[in-house]
Image (cartoon, rainbow, N blue to C red):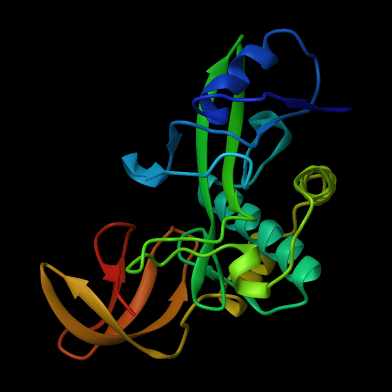
Length: 238
């Protein structure tokens, strides 16, 4: 059983979802808005969104229904959202480690997954911000939208309903850890390409080789060789 709720406006769907979990006995509870005022991203970053142009979406699922690790759950969620957008746009869609979604070199989705205990139950709180109809971004921004990257206008409500159904169905059958890692690395943004990274405030070239089950990204750096990094230890510039 699943429930999809809507708010005309809210500060953060990841924060507001807890109010809906108090009343509903369901394995999948979703909340969305097209006007989120204080979105949050990974590690304290903010996620700003233009009203009635984009989607802020949160899905709460009970952790007891999953045997996979937190890292595997994060990776698999990114895979499912990538698959949904690739099917929808008929474009090549990539995952920027650990879980941003990239379409034609622009970030169109940011994902934030948190674990919370609410009303005596433990939940994965899957939050995702989708840039859909926004057509203007800062010139230096690495962000884009489905509109800017494909030229197509998508209906926000239809997009949300289909996304919700797709995500829930795929979460009912999570593949093995090895399968998740293979798929994740197959869709990894800039894998096996020479890129520029910032490490300890210095820039150097490197090549992303793969992500691993521990949540690390292995990068072959021109000065330091092949090394693993956790999120925020190194920055991909381009």
